[in-house]
Amino acid sequence: LRRVRVLDVFHWAVMLLGLIQSGALGARKFRGGRNPQPRRALPSAHYRDRAETTESFSLDFTAVEENMDNFMTQVKNLAQSLYPCSAQKLDYDMKLHFLENTSVTCNDGTPAGYYLKESKGSRRWLIFLEGGWYCFNKENCNSRYETMRRLMSSSNWPQTKTGTGILSSLPEENPHWWNANMVFIPYCSSDVWSGATPKTDQNDYAFMGSLIIKEVVKDLLTKGLDNAKILLLAGSSAGGTGVLLNVDSVSELLEELGHTNIQVRGLSDSGWFLDNKQYRCTDCVDTINCAPTEVIKRGIKYWAGVVPERCRQAYEGKEWNCFFGYKVYPTIKRPVFIVQWLFDEAQLTVDNIHLTGQPVQEGQWRYIQNLGTELRNTLKDVPAMFAPACLSHEFITRNYWTDVQVKGTSLPRALHCWDRSLQENSRNNKSPPKGCPVHLIDSCPWPHCNPTCPTIRDQSTGQEMNVIQFLMHMGFDVQKMAHQQGMDPSKLLGMLSSGS
Image 1 (cartoon, one colour):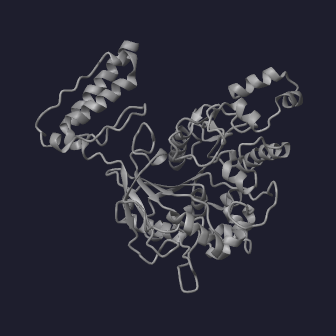
Image 2 (cartoon, one colour):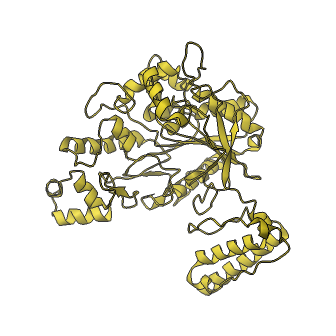
Image 3 (cartoon, one colour):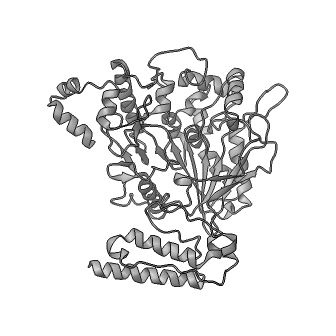
């Protein structure tokens, strides 16, 4: 059986090379290999001048018996070496475009824009909203402009940007979406993608986040989006909240413009914030110390923030509620996949739990555990979601996004299952495919009780910590917890180290 499989793969690889030679597949389409590999340097100008000369390139077929991934990597490298003219066109970068409508701007009045990497032939589009907190009055917006100007102005944006995670064009880094048209919208409105007010003599700053999204969509219609089948509006942190606030309006805009066949979906990463009480109440001076409800109440007035119509009607006079995932989500019509760490660092920060390298107090530890419980409760009725019990913030653009698993399933796999379930539902109204889960949430109660969580580092020393070291660092009392659970401390430590 193994020999038959090897021969099948070899036969497939030879056929694939034949297709490449006949021009049916370009090297751009075939970047193969599942193991992350260093990017191959583009041929030098001297070599490109020798286009008719074939480079000698050995292919070790014994690798098929030992390592299938290595074999496929060699096939990929052979294909690129045979066709240097195609290889030189491999371009993984997104290129900067400023909006055609120059009246829609960043905070300081400079033109807003987006980065685009087209994928000719693909009818899938991924539009990503960047995150980066917010400001909610003149004083902290002035401070933000001095310290984080990139998030308020386009004056120093680079001409290109390389996508990572779900924005990567490498199949080994992004197995399901690598061949989509990639769009990255920089965050320069400081309004959680909600504002619609220009800069005037009376307004020191423009807050036009919701308008920027719409103008980008209009621009993209002239660049191939008009032929799209699927548009995935994704975002992380403030961008994740921006997805919840804008996914329906993007779909409605496309329908108004006559593009009713484009299926609009949302992917909200680390934007599902809770409006809970802080661990220790402080004065609302800046975005770090201000309670979540208070900052949004002030911000929505300062930005003249726009919220989805159905949510606005549900919370008329208290529209700030629509910035919190569990309140706006039930009012959203389009399908949205929620990605949320159960112990989100940004949530802990605004709740005044600051992990500064010192062991936390018992009250802080209880607060952290309760946060995970509260998040689970708000997510229990969300059909499509991925919620690992990790202490982190943002996920889908991280290079480790393929490694974290919940109940044995990675996020890329869960998103693939979600796509399949939506396709099946649109055809036959069937239940999700068997063995393809889309509702994934950790049940273990502590930060990093999931053994696939990203590496933790001691903030004071920079040293990596395992789960037990981390919990003890956080002030976790193994003896006391074991006693509460009615078990031997050594057994509890074994369960923790195995992620049970």
